[in-house]
Image (cartoon, rainbow, N blue to C red; front, side, top):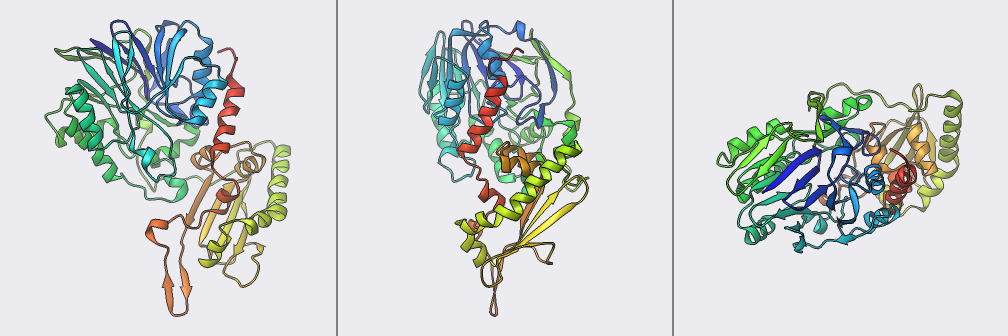
Length: 470
């Protein structure tokens, strides 16, 4: 028999007769750049959590790879013992952070590689994002756990296809308990002015995976967080479905597959004869408050204006000096050296940068359509092809290297859109549909979102939490 306990979001505690497995632990609020909180909120009695034989990290998104929780676990020799095996994807950045935190016994997994630990067989399952052209490309995996009698599969955030499903069925014949993806997250779409609706093609793949797999029982998997109260308005843009909606749709789509809701503190007992979910039956975790009602999908609802997060007047003056000095002295120099300059000129871009302070905003414009060398102009000129609006606090942090786009694009204080086209003599040209990002936003070009930025972000957390008392 295998027993699984949901701690929160993607964190599961999986127990066979002899082996304890912990997955993707995120145990503290706030999470992901301190923008999100677990939802529903939980009470977690860490001193009651049993020792862990295997710690599995599926990928480096911060709702799965939380430096604060990992720093806590590394210091807790009762939970993470000298014999604990850490399973991790082949991600150099993630592995370097584990090394900085001084984790031992780290094992890099490979697709469908069989790993035997005591009485269980663990099999990492691949994700198609590794071979996609997605901007957010990194290794990740799901995890099959088999004790010789029953098999569970935690899909986590992995993207799968019929070949992967077929391989799983060839290995184990059937799945007894399936933690399924259920909500396509569209956080960031608000900031980028992207389509705000349920991505039906992606959502249908979740339903089709369940039908193709035909498990004995399916529960909604990882997606149990929300934006913290100060950023509550972003909840209306980021979560286009719910557990309840997914289960209702699943019942209509493939009624032959049993399904059930699954919340922190719920314990599933999976044997070869039956699957029994006991609500709020865990010894170490339970729901504090079911505040899921704070997640509501209503695009077009109330939207607050952008405003600096700096409240101290003296600090604000310093912040604005950094911002204005950069824009007036260094911005155009970087623009003129950019590899994207010819693209902005080709598409006759009129670019507007709007910086929001404590009260109101300031606007700068670059007209790439004018003949000759582009120049920076203060004030509106009546046309926009690419727009970036950002708070002075976030722009100052980008200039000084103290933040990442992960935070900037998710905190609600950065918004962008583009209306790209080109007027020719007697003609009208649009960018090719497969090259919608041909002309990128200038700030994103000047402060590139790359591995160096991500490493600085993680290292700030390592320095903040490593060796600290909790």
